[in-house]
Amino acid sequence: MTLDVQVSTKIVIMGTSSLSLNDRFSKIKKVVVPPPSKYDYALAGAPADFVAKPNDNLWYLPSDPTASRNPLTRLAAYAAVHSFGIRMLYPGATGVLNLMLGGSLRQARKLAVQNKSAKRAVLKSARGDYVDTLFKRGSGSLASTLVICSEGNAGYYEIGIMGTVEARGYSILGWNQPGFGESTCAPYPQQTLASADAVWQYATDVLGYKEEEIVLFGWSIGGFPSTWLVANHPKIMGLVLDATFDDLLPLAEYRMPGEDLGSMPLIYSRRRSCAIRGFLNLDIAGQLGQYAGPVRLIRRLQEEILIMDEGGSEDEKRATNRANDLLKRLLQQRHAETARGVLHHSEAPKEVT
Image 1 (cartoon, rainbow, N blue to C red):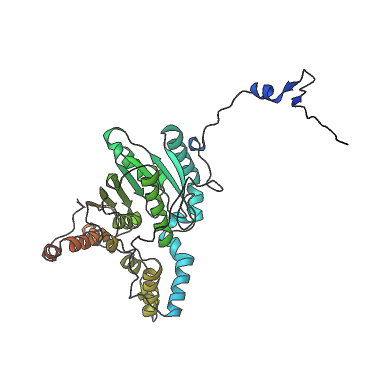
Image 2 (tube, helix red, strand yellow):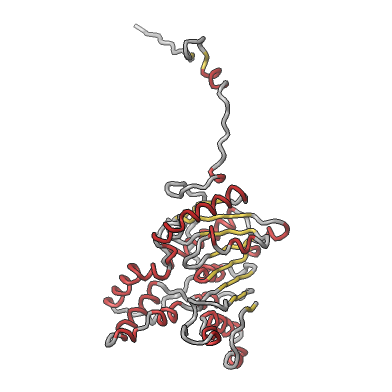
């Protein structure tokens, strides 16, 4: 026996006459929901707008042969870096500072996205970390130039150097380093450079800027990813480094001197050197030496972090500013013969192009 069953496509609504589904749906008003780019939102669980491709041809600083190979020394150095060292170097990645500034960051993003037509995008680096970025197209003829802004060790794109560039009319792309704001992971060198590479790929592959149309702007420790990018992309329009040092190790030796440990200075010094060279080797001048294009260095007069003589006069403090050493190494790399005689008798200027 065959049983035929017919399923009606009509529904009864509140006792009124039956309507077909098509008729019913046609009476529903269409609601246009703005895309997520028009809102500020939490990155947790948000899909990536762009996924960076792995690149095995990127250049990195070679390993430092002076770093200790002693297993116990390396273990102690590793423990120091991964417990308190990375937090001291990058306070902007700590939960306390992120919590304190969270409201201000959200308010700044809301203003940029809703009032200034900025576009927020979530990038996924080749290492799997998520990078929070913000892009705003400039106005007039300068809009064709993109400035990628890399912030300092307690700076965020929401309240950092992007505002300075925006006022000039350039297009700007800001990003938060790992652990800053809503970017994930922690700012170890490998994660930071992978995030910087994702930002670069997004700027060229999605935003459509050519290498020759991009300027890199690094503030303080933001000079580390900026100089690494110019080392790998030497055709960029130019590089600006503001309050940037030459190498982390001399600063670490001054800020954490081993002489205060009595009979243990040599052991402490080896662990400190191993920690920096082995796990936090921020040799900015070494990376800058791979680039032969235009550079502008800006040295601040009232610097507090980069100086190595806090008890001297203002002139003595400025003379020990590590931005001076960055300039010296740059001159030695590009003009070795000239620099040999000049640097012995002159003090680094405040600004050089």
